[in-house]
Length: 315
Image (cartoon, rainbow, N blue to C red; front, side, top):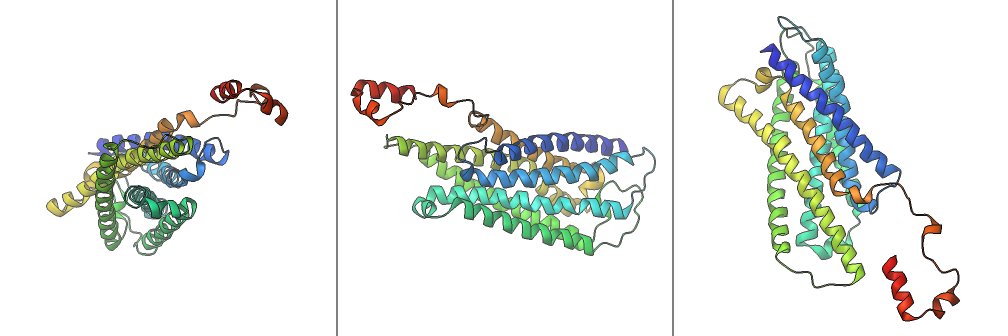
């Protein structure tokens, strides 16, 4: 059994390191303005912030678990376990709320497009992040102010150290959020399926750009929702059902496997964003000398329609 704990911890540490690197790069891309349509992608930015926060907190918490591991006996410090773990459920709320916000954003765009176009994407994203941060604060202080700080020898996870009421709250709140993600995902998938059966009737450049942005947001949201279903919702349901049926915490059997699953979700979120935006990320390589730009308005006016068409096509 202790070897299973160590294996789970090593997997979690590897996923945490990878999630930190990937999401740090995404944040770097946003703040250095190396991606187009950044305002339409503010929610993925906030998701990356939540994922990297969870990953860094996991490196500290799970790193301590692995460092203190012993194949016969281990006794973790309850203060260190609680202090380092308190950020994990809190950061998870940011991740879950932003994921739900992305799903609801797509629901609005698909089913109520007129209202969607009238709302500010930046304001909406900021409100979603504030809601996630408020829930972050609630979970953090709930866990910090309720434990007994008692030693539990040979206990591999935080489930032995936190208050039982907090553990029940986290279990059911995560399960409810998971169910909401499932419901929202169903609405998104059904709506996208209906849209895919309709042919686009607009051929203008502006409408084509709008359609591309819409499709890009759909792909990102669908990829992140699939990741949330597999690595957040399903593990959360397994934890709740297993304890309800057996009366034994699954954490005590496998160690911090749920942390590992959420960290893998953070890696998946980052990869989805990078893969779908790889063409839009990069340094500005086009200089003024490389662009075809006539120097005066008279030169443009003197050109024939054929020459103007050639310039537009080249650009």
